[in-house]
Image (cartoon, rainbow over all chains, first blue to last red; front, side):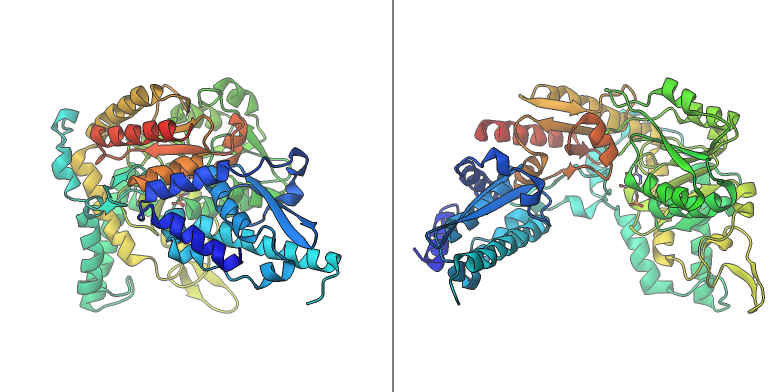
Length: 144
Length: 413
Ligand SMILES: Cc1ncc(COP(=O)(O)O)c(C=O)c1O
């Protein structure tokens, strides 16, 4: 699935909640719980995303030129948020991630149910993912 | 002064009508506002005072001779007298208008610190201070080579008074503590603290940010050297607060900021300063908010602190009783003597998540460290959920909070 297609899927999922804030937040928390367990040895300060109020650990690995992220957070809603990004970006080429435009946030009304502090943290997560993509692109030897 | 009515006589439904902001739905639910320790809502009298000033007599104060300037100056100085009465100060010259408690403490730390502190001197704070009663002292301590010492906090959230007494010595020059804690609600025994601190010759500042809307304050009886409050935490506007200081100290202290209003005469060779309080009020002050602050004093005086306290105590007792029954809850701050603040944690759910889920049901609480990180470290936590009640809150609203918490527990386990 492309980065755009996954986002459309997410938009459809959230549409079922009809904008109910409580249900949307609960749903996000459930999504976060479904993330695979985060490797304990990676839970170090160097892997924390700067600019998040909550703690968010984020790492990336390259397998066959494709990037796979794993993440964890000390708060359930933030973990849900990062799980959405992982769902969108996982298994893509570094360039796809670097060029990938994110449009689902507005459409699911995310600002309304996460507030500005978490929105800033969310932007920081995206930025960190793109930084990983940039760094791994050079190590993988793929040329733009 | 108005004779105090009993708690039963406070008519909360009609009192709520005076607060326009309370009557709205948030995320489809009637708003429950339990973030009063951060800032209280404003009664119409305060809002109208702001509007009336800007619509009717906006003018710069003190040096104007025209009618509007005269009217604005009179209203401004009437607020000073209202603040003097509210705090029980001997003279109105001992009342300095500031932006809030933060600015008041910075003013005292910088100004008093510069004439009082020598290398090796000590500033004694408590382990439950707001960052605004820590950082200004750290700044001046570094500048003057002074040291900061801390009164420890017990498990229930009270000051360890034996440790306090052991910390006092001739080196103690300043003791600065809050009247009531914003994170725990604890009311501190400031009479004893002031008396013992004075016995070793220290000056005492009391941070009254969390006391002003709830507790009787009488600075002459307390005999504190400084007392400060923020208007926005006592039904008044943002951007205005009051610093009370004893005349003798204020007169000795150098100005904190320079500019207009605070001078007598300026030449490039030598400037002479104005008398107190103006010496500490450089520049055009926050005229509108100072004037409207009087509306907040009037509001509180009209109800009477005793009646307010009785109602809020009832709310706190009710909240504690009901919260105790919630599965997995841990109450933080269980001192015997408290203002209407309760911090707590729900097992297995981060405070941010609890706050967000409550907000989805129209319930406003605060989550995080509440600008008291050293206190959070003391309890080995990185934050709490805090519900803080004002005079307009009701038991029915506490029921809504309980419903919300019960639902979080049932859905997220
Ligand atoms: C105990 C205490 N001290 C100081 C402050 C700072 O007050 P302000 O931000 O109004 O200057 C607060 C406000 O949160 C407080 O609760």
